[in-house]
Image 1 (tube, rainbow, N blue to C red):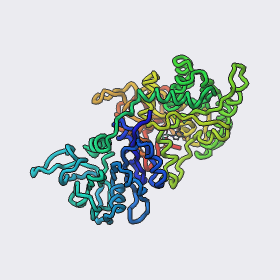
Image 2 (image 1 turned 180 degrees about the vertical axis):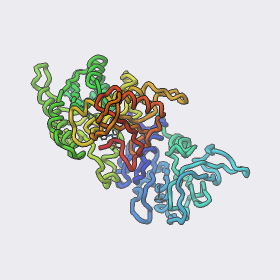
Image 3 (image 1 turned 180 degrees about the horizontal axis):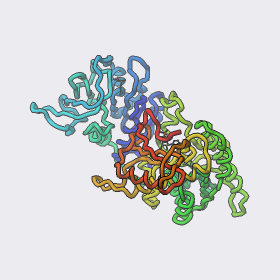
Image 4 (image 1 turned 90 degrees about the vertical axis):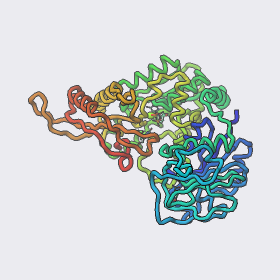
Length: 538
Ligand SMILES: Nc1ncnc2c1ncn2[C@@H]1O[C@H](COP(=O)(O)OP(=O)(O)OP(=O)(O)O)[C@@H](O)[C@H]1O
Ligand SMILES: O=c1[nH]c(=O)c2[nH+]cn([C@@H]3O[C@H](COP(=O)(O)O)[C@@H](O)[C@H]3O)c2[nH]1
Ligand SMILES: NC(=O)CC[C@H](N)C(=O)O
Ligand SMILES: [Mg+2]
């Protein structure tokens, strides 16, 4: 089935993904593409008639400094266009208006007054002033402003310091807002985007997870035919959901390879095997490669070097398993496809025009280089989905709730949570400390929300610090290792706040770790946000 869709052109804003999230939440399919796609691309993209509207994102740049423009064809498609912040500014400039650098900058909360009556803001006000004007509580982040409306536009909204905070050409259905409707701080932001997407663009809300399973199953069958697929299964959310979906489509033509690199969490290996072999009846090969990984990591202390070694060993193991599959005597012909749990944020991050300019903070282990080296074709059934859509899909496929709502776990595992040199002794201590932390997070329920602290945090784990400190236990002196607890709250993992865990919880965890894990005598809590820190320590 062909879905109607909204095109989001990304000018490099930090929050472009949120626009996509909000549109998807309205059950409308959308895609984010870099702003520098050309006119031919836009026309081809719209050729099947399913493109119902375009949204132009914000940017850190200024329209008078860079020449990032929307392809002109966007304004000639006959579909509605919404410009947000920089998106509004470039729309204004491209259509004959004027944009200038302002002397006052607006960051954060602002109140915007609706002007006149426009279709976009119809029925969308947070409150009315005594004079009867509609006001919106919004989030702003800009220094430049539109100072002259382009021909055909009328004023839609303003603030004290930004007289043109919204503009509309109702004839052509072009709208611009200086504020950010995609962030939750803009109280009616979701309502405004819903109105644009559903009413102004008239899009059919047909993006529903239930239907997606049937469509995905059909397309996997078509793509794979009677060939065979291997999939790197980590037990994490993405690869597990990909495995369940592909298994539903092609059954035994799928073989999952689960690599135990000796850097997994406590009992993780058995849990993953149990679930896949036991409940889903999928073929899973468990490869015990801990000696290989720990052997190659011995003596290596540099984080980037550790990541590269782990990435390379993953490739080696997959390669060896793909070969073995041909000769296993069970009628396998050998895999021609490699399946991956790549999700939409991975696609945007690696393909976005903007992110190519970004510096490498850490080389995320990735299997992106795999297919070429292995001579395999790629199968990525989740590449259009956001994480929470993947989770919804997992539940719909019958995966247990606990598995689907697990915190993400990085491929290099404890390898990046043991600072410096990785040793089995350290990994064993860390596994036990981490298991205690997670157990307590799960059992501590927050009274206000009724949720466990595991569910209230996005990711939580323990980090092993290879330093010793002095302690006293049972009147004796100890000289043992230190661990740090890390718990963060984030929606996209690009930025994160450290979680304000209750002291009672921290107290319990600390006392249990020190009492139960001999070899650790000190526990600290990491109170750094991202940025400037990162979530993992390496
Ligand atoms: N131990 C492992 N064995 C086999 N494949 C792995 C392993 N760890 C990671 N991978 C592969 O690397 C991919 C990327 O890992 P990543 O952690 O980003 O995703 P995930 O584990 O599927 O989900 P989550 O983000 O919830 O942890 C996985 O989808 C999987 O294919
Ligand atoms: O699959 C992965 N392979 C990796 O190499 C990797 N490194 C970091 N992470 C995860 O990415 C998110 C952001 O982490 P950082 O703030 O530490 O960069 C967090 O969720 C991290 O756990 C990884 N995931
Ligand atoms: N967030 C934005 O899109 C900002 C646009 C532009 N850089 C400004 O300061 O106005
Ligand atoms: Mg993972």
